[in-house]
Amino acid sequence: MYPMTGITVLERLIAEMEPLLHDATFVFACLPPDTEPPYGLKPRMIFTEAEGTTLILERAVAVRNNIAHAFPCRMITLQVHSALEAVGFLAAVAARLSELGMGVNPVAGFHHDHLFVPEDRAEAALASLKDMSREAKSARSA
Image (spheres, rainbow, N blue to C red):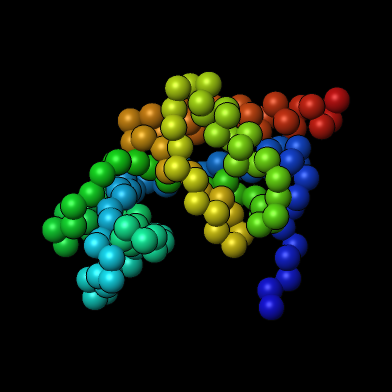
């Protein structure tokens, strides 16, 4: 059993999130039900639904493996250990990005939350999230 030491306090999560934009361009793909990903493929995420298996993988890998894909995006990792039971963190982040008219596809990992944002809007998303963190830090120290 893993210790659940993640942060649950919303204000602290936002203040300490340190968003990091990754260089790679990712895409979403969906394999038909009961289809295994190609051998050796290392997607960033695999999630199975009734309709098929969703993969998030680098665009270059999808192209190289002839995998149909959509939504070219960049990944932003919120570098704070958010507890899996934390309330409102991703909602607050998504609301902030919605102010820019931007959708976001979040993925919660055991230690961090990751955001997949439109490739051409990634820098704007990063700047807005850094501003959000700075504002939360200022509010905490006031």
